[in-house]
Amino acid sequence: MERINSQVNIQSMLQTIRAYQSNASKGMDEIAPRLDGQVQGANSFTDAIKSSLNNVNGLQTKADETVDAYERGEGVPLTDVVLNMQKSSIAFEATLQVRNKVLKAYEDILNMPV
Image 1: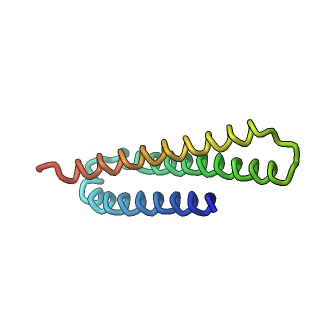
Image 2 (image 1 turned 180 degrees about the horizontal axis):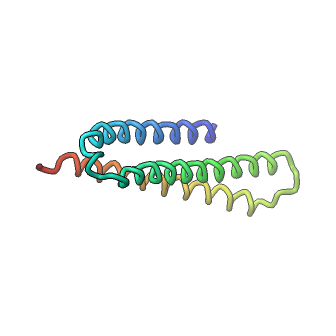
């Protein structure tokens, strides 16, 4: 159940980032000719976000697999289960905080007087 909720949260984050990216790219069309090669940085940022989210998802999947193996009695130490669960929890919380900071920064930029 936690895995489904975390996947839904990750999907929600991705949709929010895509929406902001879409809005930002609309504004970039007007200034893109003046930026020349600098527009390429947006793609590397998107790739970095995707990579981070995939890493968090991998940690959550590993934690779920460890819990399942422990519950089946496969000889997985309880310390490994707890450690993997804490790693995935901390990674998700950090990702959530980064998302919140990025959205706040974007909103601040939008509200700047021109």
